[in-house]
Amino acid sequence: MNEVLLELLRIRSIDWTDRTHFFRVAGRLLRRRFIDYIRAQRAEKRPPKGARVDCQDLLLPTEDRFEEIILVHEGLEQLADFDSALAELVEMVYFGGIPIVAVAEARGVSEKTIDRHLELARRWLERRFRVACPQLKPETAITK
Image 1 (spheres, rainbow, N blue to C red):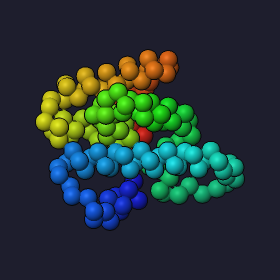
Image 2: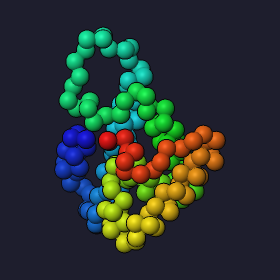
Image 3: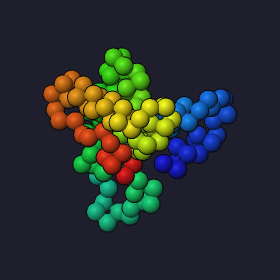
Image 4: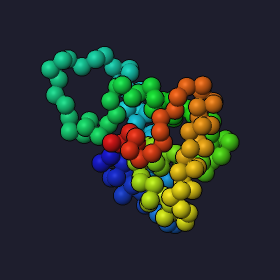
């Protein structure tokens, strides 16, 4: 999370248009970091049992969520072809952990509309992969 924040602060080439733009970019960067982290963890051998836990690792997903996160990531790639705005919404909420209230305010719609869109995305992902999709709410975001 800290690395993403620093990266956002270092980016000078982006002309931020509004909060939604910031949330989209932050969600996308967090998604990339999580996927890179999962792939690196899967490539490494397991650490020794007595290995220290780095404080930075406390905000990263645990191994029991890796499969879910990869499925959502792959599903978003396909969902973006179908509806890019819906994919960005899932990215902001699921990967970015951005509260529905903030997303609704940034997009100029009601929280109920955001809830409906997230439910539509969840059902689309479930149909696509024929597996249960996690609730796409900030409570289930991987940054928690």
